Image (cartoon, rainbow, N blue to C red; front, side, top):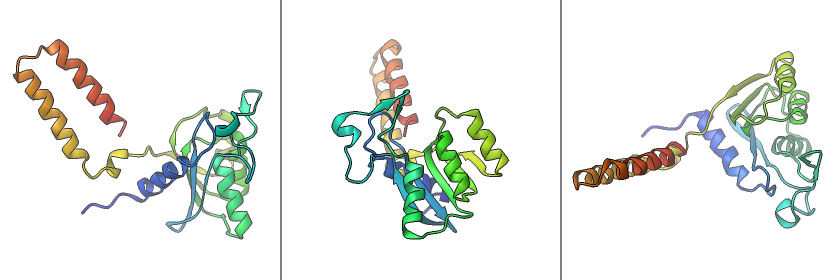
Length: 188
């Protein structure tokens, strides 16, 4: 049995956390890790006990939802609340951090940012990370590793498309199905 990499393991955790997000504009998850152990997790949502974007919509000022606490901040605050040190830790985030989260990550002493998706990667955030010697790298979640039947699904789809072609269905009809399947499986 092949085990998934640590990067994929922690990135999957961040994507799972993002499913708890209450912001309707973007769902983000973050996992703080030290010594290959998860020490905190966060997702973007409103203050505890407050109104959530999914309930009343986003509260947007200057094209930014001010109701939302970002995932990275929630994870860092969770560490602070429970007295868990973040110095030297890593943070896995579903999206590239904004400038404010970048500054909080640096101030928390986190030394590595691993993110899955580019999102408004601000040049100043990149500069701040470089100046603080915070290592930043992109690791996209390989979602197919989470599906133990992914190869069987790929094989079945290929077989069905082949049978359509063998049955005389025109290549003009099979090609869009093939492209749609390729697009669908590339998202996994």
